[in-house]
Length: 146
Image (cartoon, rainbow, N blue to C red; front, top):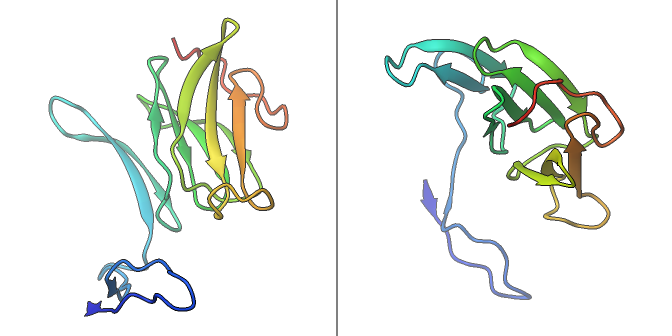
């Protein structure tokens, strides 16, 4: 790690105070993963591996679904018990924000930001999906969020 000096001219820029060198883990290339563990025994129930770390949050529902948006723009729904992929949808651009669930008009929805420019009107857009339709009317699991 190398300490850096903030840039203030011609305008302020992002400065996190240091430069970091990314190094792959000793057992292979950098990657991401999501594990599901038994909350009592901590034993691993299942694992899904990504080609790069997912940068968005994960949503687990009372209806036994786990929604995982990835950096390449794919939103996936898994069975929380088995890890079986039940549904996926490509949004066209990567995800790096939080995913939420809400209800409106007696329907349950999920919503997540998609894009890398912090809601820039040209590169980012919110995606809201009904549990029977998604951004482009793609079917999702029939399980309810409860």
